[in-house]
Amino acid sequence: MKRQPTLMTLMAVLLMAVCACRSHYEVAGIQRTRILVDSRYDAQPDVRATEFLAPYKHIVDSIMGPVVGRSAKYMTAQRPEGTLSNLLADILVWAAKDYNEQVDLGIYNMGGVRADLPKGEITYGNVLDVAPFENKIAFITLSGDVLLELLGQIAAVGGEGMSHSMRMVISKDNKLLSATIHGEPVDPARSYRVTTIDYLLGGTDKMEAFKKGTDIHSPKDVSNNTRFIIMNYFRDMQKQGKVVDADIEGRVKVKE
Image (cartoon, rainbow, N blue to C red; front, top):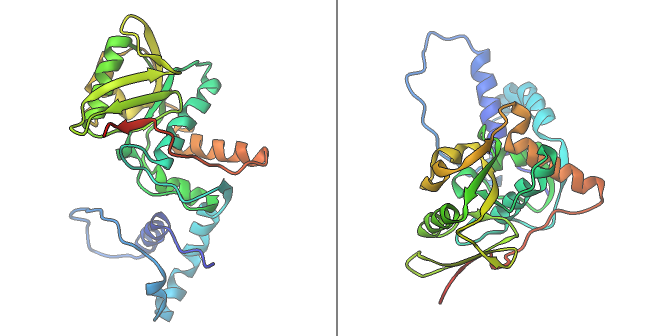
């Protein structure tokens, strides 16, 4: 099957093409939108354009093309629960060991997931499409009552990416009904270690309760970027001869 160029690949090619051209024009503004690029654009290719872009495409493909692992199926991030959002939260928990952290749960926001994950070979470009931002892994301690407040905020938007340890039940009108971690009800009197992304620590994406957390560990080096952590996970699974997979498990359920 012919592999189609990713949006990030085309954006990079365009950027390099623009940089190569000398012009008196100046950028007055930038707007971003997603455009589906598929085989319909191959029907009548522009030969001159293809020849012009060829050297730039070669460079971009050499960066975006390396395979980091394999995916068992097409994965998406969706509410109340999605395969990709489940996977990304689990990857944050998996990475905690590299930071000498022992965590109770992982949370990955839907807004930080910008593409689906295809089935089969996964490239650097695929991962970059999923996690294009400079978000980095972070760790924070929340008291049980604050965690319940946070889970209520997550219920209010219909769910976010939650790790395997978490089970939430929410009502049809997006109210938190119950929450357990490792099968035990969340205890308002104890503390919980949470791994997430640094973007959320300031209470963004309507997760205001994060602002009440303590003992924050938020490494700033670029190697802590989520896309590199995701790639490391795929590479580790590939070394073990494993295909990456995730399922809908009832981590966030809406009570009928």
